[in-house]
Image (spheres, rainbow, N blue to C red):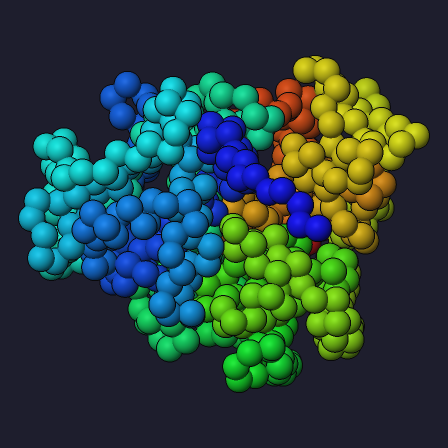
Length: 552
């Protein structure tokens, strides 16, 4: 007997508000919008403008010279679950990215567009306040008003000055009523909006350079060339695999998948071991590769666009000694079911059979990367990285008398830093770092207070971390120009070297003693600015002749 059925409509307001919590980061949201520009939009040039207006409110706009849209095209683009693209290999997937990515951070999304044959331009907007007031999916949808038309004209004028020719068609995305962008990692409103926006810009720049590497690199024929500008600056591709700077491709393999319909499809794996600093002649190119714990792992590409990583995707753990191992895994859109691609085109869930295959393939590569890395670390260690150094002996004897934060570990595995601000979480009971203090993974220098690294995130001269022995360390960037040109020439003078190391240790511990979720970003910004200025100040100083042999 057939049961009765009933159509139950969802609560419109709760659904659209719920889409605001899909977990996008700012940089991932902008990348999804760029997908629409260079995918279905077919744009050759994309200009992103972010900043603060005279009232200190955030501005986010994305303009492109793509095909543009008429009213019907705008309606489809703004529909939650837009029509599937005719091109199955499009960067777009569910027809949700533009809306969910934008309303994660703003309450009003405006799209202004001009197709080639249309004059004047058209506009559509989702205003979440209107949806909440009416309880209906009310989309503003009409010929652009004077303000919207002027905004599109201004954006296309700027795009033409950057690209060299005026586009007949184009589209402008505007975030209005931005309420979730300038937040601290703890979710609170940023106290200094200028610093927060500057940091967002820097993070976005590096993200786009990595995600759209193949599109930005005119020498890479795996994707058509696209120019992306951020606040007027043309972005350069960032190659994780350093193919032009000594990256050694140690493995290449294809995986063929038989899908239920159509021809078989292939994913391609290429694995690279990057050189050590002492193995390269072009130090600047090596520094650009940013060999570090956070950059090792698998880089997963869908249709030429990075969608996940770097991470090991369940094939193994991150280890300090394989920082030089990076793996490229590329597939086309038809293999989305195998790789479990979601709305955000990140957070993939790969088929378990493939994970097992990858684990077997990567095991010998991890051993080889480990072997090459340890050969370099042994060289550094021979130069004085040991707990018996005068600096370590003195700190071990006196740091109990210093005003520095302390570390406490709970029975549930949680780790807490206790400083002047109170209890600051470092590692939760679930084993996940809070992100407020860097946590070192399996480091052979875990018992030391002052540690040298070949490079540090954002190119800073110094940083702090918690070692596996729960020691709060200061990390020095041995690849920084100031370290090379100012520190190494006096490194043979034990007293001077200790004094410099004590200075960095004291600064690091003072910062940690005042750090919490609210102040962390401010301290990081200060470190970045100081490190950049020092690099400029020592530009004309001579380089030491034997930098790798003069560590005290």
